[in-house]
Image (cartoon, each protein chain N blue to C red):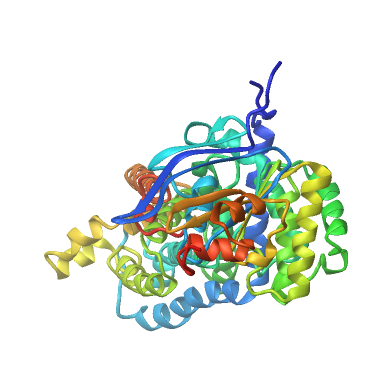
Length: 275
Length: 248
């Protein structure tokens, strides 16, 4: 018996597929200008209103990686960068739920490339979109008077890729577990704000330890805290090994859960039907 | 002498959603270059069957092989041979016709120059050149279906699966799409599995598979099925088979 000719997949197939998924994400991002604007307006409001208002109330002592006293705006900058990535990760996952409801997810899933690869491409594409947003916000922050060392702009990039992937994988995992668009929108509110507030994004952990007995435990077990701290150190050309390792660990866990969730044989979708 | 394995071969397929059995012991195969109509009422199991063939769902019991490749073990080898139009439209409405096709080509790892050439060919074949830069959101239902058909042909599949592709379309669009796919089947020896609940889409010479409540009730050409059911037309035969009319 002869089989129809099958052409083995090459590295070129994988690269072209990655390129195609990237292009699609970029096109969608360009078409959705309001998404870009809202991604910038949100941290601008925090910077211009919240940080300015709390500058005199919340004093920040000298803590690593800072060499001297800093203004509150400087302190919350890494948290705002991580917030951009958190929102972007949730937005990308929301679009996956939307794609699934609208049916266009099927186009992706019946591609003759491994499903894990397709999902990782999607995750990387979403992360790169968030990196563009972060650098655009850094420009605004610079105009606002927040100066970071030039080396920080370079060392920030790998940290952003890692934190963006981790937060995107978290969103992807949520999208695999939640079927309906309405449900996901609700979950976003329950996830984003607790993650953001119960972290070191707005106040140093030592301040939280002073004011509450249980809250530090929550903050210390929050993956977002480590993303913020990793970004904070990278902005000054430094590495916080503990944060970097934990972010990588959380990425592994969330990505594994997301891949499991999108596995038609075992995942959460298998029990829900209708990919 | 070597024989080619059938484009689609299904053996004792069983699938259940919890306690609800959607497919029960389904077996059939399609010969190369044939147009086969999968006929069944809504809820017969057609979409479940398509989801299994396209590997969106994982097999519970039974086997599916495409051109000799076992879908459970060799899905990445089997999928390139298949082109699909799902019942629910799957175009990205925020992208243009061209961008949708380009995206599909990339998902199949197609080189940009080849993709460009194939897209031009398929747009021409489907008379969609003038709409290439239009957002798919602005297209009519019939035009969107034509884009989906053009898209599924880009990677030159040998087996086409179309799940109720004419639902919701006007008579002219339905006719155009049907004759376009029949033309592909006849002139390019592409095998087609066309799922529908519309009996008037059946041509007398074509093979029909009647699916009802997850079970295959009959298969063969219209003449064979009408003879088997002792009826005068495939419509009557179908009514008798699914219990909408009494056996004569």
